[in-house]
Image 1 (spheres, rainbow, N blue to C red):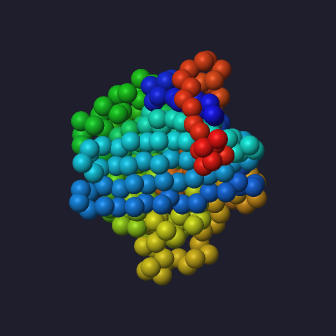
Image 2: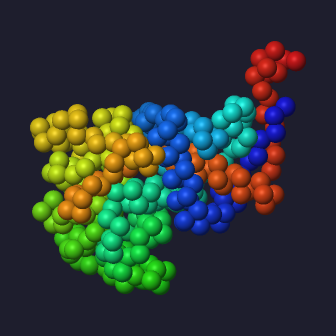
Image 3: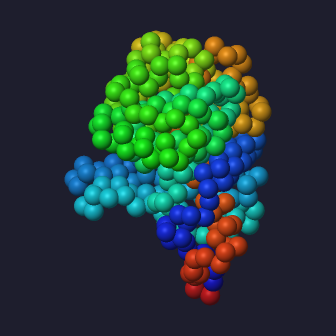
Length: 332
């Protein structure tokens, strides 16, 4: 028998701060940039009842971990459920099984923050957020740990939601956080722009994006989702989480490519290559940079491993038994 630590979502919820997540995810992308491996998600869709089953994996030798998410969304339950097996990268042994729902906005937000730290100007003080849901909150929580923002402006279509977001973060951050009436107002003078939506069309005009800005776009995980303008992709130093994913489902990049604005060589680097120092990030202040975040096993495994280690230290979770293949297949 193999003892495996099972961790509930509520047990994971308060184990790490946003900066802890950023540190863990940065280590994950550095490991991937050096000698790790990861592939874009596999997504299987059903129509009746409508839903999808999705999974992605990563092996991060320097972190010491491998594994990834499998989750189902929709179907008859009309909800989403995250299952996260975590393996030791040296022994291959299954060490933990996590209910990963509570960590999702934190690890995704940390990925955006790692990209901001690698690609945004060091003197960035103004942040624009387009979107006001859980993912937008996760992005701002984490990004505010890598830049000292003085001003944050948020826009989302529902006035009540953007006002609530602004009130929450005005109390949470040292920055002046305000809700504005349009994406153009949010982007005015912005050094960092975060888009966290489910939009199928661009949520801002390229002409409204200042020179020198960095954009983190995290709602582009489908060929038909074009959260940022293709023209922004074309004028930018474009960095996706995974190069292969950009060609699989990064909607705005694919739109720019299909219309001839960019070619295959427009992908500057993967985030891990920049974090590990194998490729440069920003090279001058007027440069526009884009990080295209669609979700990978890299941040998932890196964050989960950090939580697993913290949980073990605190004696959280309960042990469940798995039968290894050497026993299960032979019956011995």
